[in-house]
Image (cartoon, rainbow, N blue to C red; front, side, top):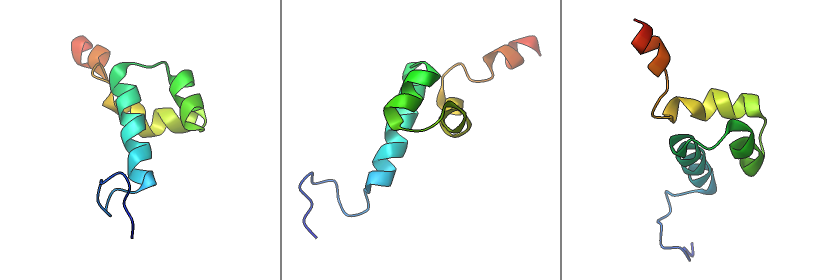
Length: 64
């Protein structure tokens, strides 16, 4: 199989999609923008990726 990006056979479009979603969450991209960029609903984006944001559950931990 030809690999024009030299990423290796284990790196699939699905893996790259997850990488993109994770990076969007880590960068703090607004959910509606990231979801639109990735072609998914905001609900699916939030369920799948927002736990990667650096401040995830920060308010809950602070309240504790």
